[in-house]
Structure formats: C-alpha cells, structure tokens
Amino acid sequence: MKKIIYLLLIAQVLTSGAIAQVGIGTTTPSTTSVLELKSNNKGFLLPRTSTATRLSMTGAEGLMMYDTSNHQVFYHTGVAWKNLVPGPYHWTVSQADDVSIFNNNTGFVGIGTGDYVPYKFSVAGTIYTYESSKSTIRIGGVASTTEARILWDLPSNATDYNITQNSNKLYISRTVGAAGFLSDLVLNNNGWVGIGTDAPQNKLTIEGGSDVGNASGGYLQLGLTASTNMGIDNNEIQARNNGLVSRLVLNNGGGAVQVGSALTPTGYSFSVNGKMICEELKIQASSNWPDYVFKEHYALLNFDELRHFIKTQNHLPNIPDAQSMEAHGIEVGDMQKRMMEKIEELTLYILQLEDQYKLLKTELQELKSKQ
Image 1 (cartoon, one colour):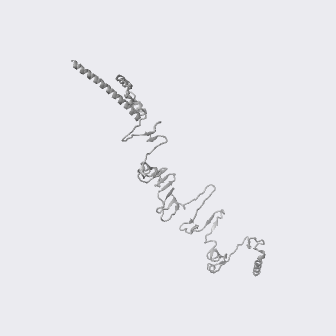
Image 2 (spheres, helix red, strand yellow):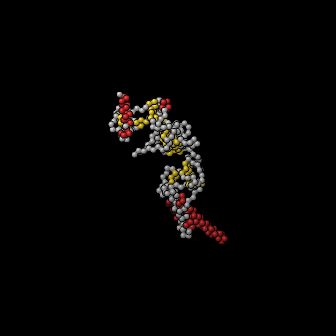
Image 3 (tube, one colour):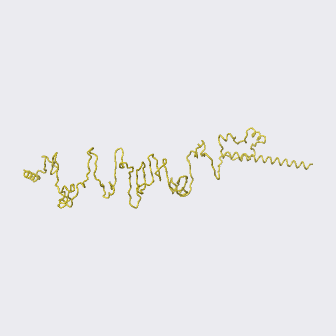
C-alpha cells in the first residue's frame, strides 16, 4: 500500500509541470507555492541526522536538515552549513500576553557587534525608546541590591564616567576603585545637591577648591576667566576681570544692601547691624558746605542770643537734640556739615573776642599813658 502511495506522489510531482502546484491534505494548493502541506494536527518533519553525518554531506544551496546532536535546524549555502536559528536559546513569546518576548540565554547578547564580553547586552549603534506619552529606560537592582549604574566605558587612555544610584543617592562621577564613584556631583533623596561631597547639608553644598585670589582660585566661579568673573571660596568673594582685580557691584539696579539682621530703612542703600571699622571714610557732600558762615550778611547770633538758646533748648542751634538722634540716628555727611558750621561760627566768635580784647588793650594803654 505504501508503495502505491509513493508512486502516486511521484506521478503527481512528474505531472506538476502541467498542474503547477502540489497539495497534500488539500485539493486547492496555493497558486504561489509549488508544494502545500495542510493538516490541523500534524507537523512537517525535516530530514534528521547527526552533526558528523551532516558535515560529511555535500549540500545544494537551500538544503535543510535537522541536526539531532545540536538540536538545531541548518541550511546549506552551497558552500557551508549555517544555523537557521543559532544556538539552543530561542526568543519566546510570553504565553501570558502574547506580546512580551524573552530569551532563556544565560550568556551574552550582541546587536551589531560581536564584542559583547563581559556585558550581558551590547549594541553597536543607537538605542531608541518611544512611547506616546513618555519614553523611559529603567535600570533595576537585584533583590536587596541598592546599586544600579550607567557606565560610559571609554578607551583605556581616557577617564570613564558613570551615573550611579546607590543608597538613596544619585552620583554623576568619574569611575575609580571598586565602588566606582567620586563625590563629583550627588543628588540625595531630599533633593539636595552636593559637589565634591556625598553629604550635602542644604540645597547646594560645594566642598573643595582653592583660596580665591585676584586672578584665579575659589570653590565656585561665575563668568569666564578671560572676562569679568567672580570667584567664591568658603569665606571670600573676589571680583575679577581677565586675571586682574575688578570692582564688586551689589544691587546695581536698585535695592538696599543689608549686613546683619537690621532692616535697611526706606531711602537708604546700605545698613549694618553692628560696628564698622575702616582706615578712611570719604563722604561726598551733596549740599552746600557751610562756607556761607563767612559771608558778610550771615546772621550770626550774638552772645546773649546764643546763651539764651542753649539755656532753653539744651543743645546748639542747628544741631539735633539727643532725643532726635536716639530716634533717627545720625547722618554722617549732614552732621559733618553742621559741625563745620559750628566750628566756623566759633571761629567768628573767637575773632570777635579778639577784636574786643584788642580794643580793651588799646584803651588800657591809653589810660595808663594819661596817668
């Protein structure tokens, strides 16, 4: 019976030049196929042989065999055998959702490269992720591991850099040692940033650097070295301009400068809560200096008027009283002008006394000469 079936199949194949298609299990084979096998409960079994037998065969291009030693399907290029699906590790669609795909490979996977050792997954080219609302690459630790890392593995003559998550901190750093991080830049779980330290104590903590100088140095520099810039270390601020000292400007566009907790009163630009000391202080007068005292028609009080004012007011004319000074303070420039006014008036009083003395001296001499 089997011989009869084989003869019928051979006859069918021999006459296929006229029919064009052969169908097994179907009377209507596809017009696009020379041979169509159809079954609902049986598969197609390739010829099977061992690796040794397969390698001894001379194959035509397109010849296919199942290798029972490697459990793989091979095809022949006319020159050599090639794996149809390399290795015993196959990509598998998840039976749970028929969408996810996974591989049971315990070794390494390379895309576009064979230089994948020692990394589990290597790509020579660009990885592109896309989602309509967001795009995410997630790197997770294993079990209780707190570290996960993205590493830029550069040539041996260059410094490697990495982004590392470890112990609730994100490090952006150069790779050194087994742990792989320096405290170049750290973001902790409070949202605080540390530069040069992995323990920031506020929103931004910078540790390390050099003493700020006129030309360079500091923990932080704002601006270009070859232009105007400002250097800051842990207790100094230095304004610079291309290696030279420069002026430091505060609130150039307006607003008061305050040192300490004392609020700057309205109308003033600078306030200090405490004492100030300097080698020299210059007040640029903005009103007339009291040289007007020496003008011919200046209304200088006579001695009786001055005596009466002091007795009733307990302070000099045109000088604020103690109560006013305690309440409103002293404006140095204005007070210097008022004090100079009193000095110039005092000079006039001295000159008046001298004139009176000279007159009295003359009268005494005349009186003596008559005796």
